Length: 143
Image (cartoon, rainbow, N blue to C red):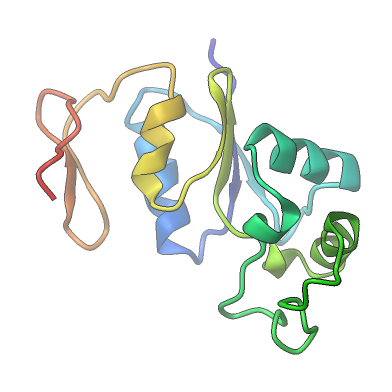
């Protein structure tokens, strides 16, 4: 059994597409709706580190208090930025996916394909109609 966890926002199209790609690989992941159940400090720091990112690279700007909090100021340390994300989980960019093959911030959603242990089981198109996987379960690369 493969363990996959997605830190998911059901209101986000990229997150919904990523979740659908995981399911298209035949796996039902653990879904953490991080706005309802935010990760604790240790988990958030582990996810950021495992993805090979800095806290700043995980910050979401659009639709968040990023500008009001002045988070573009370089004086904020990674630990301080994590504090902001813990106080305002909407600042955590999504979706973050952890699998046995790695952890990624999956923007665009097809970035999840690089860390899924199982291949895709069939055709897949994003919500906007963009075809990502063909009928044989292969990635469509002509974009």
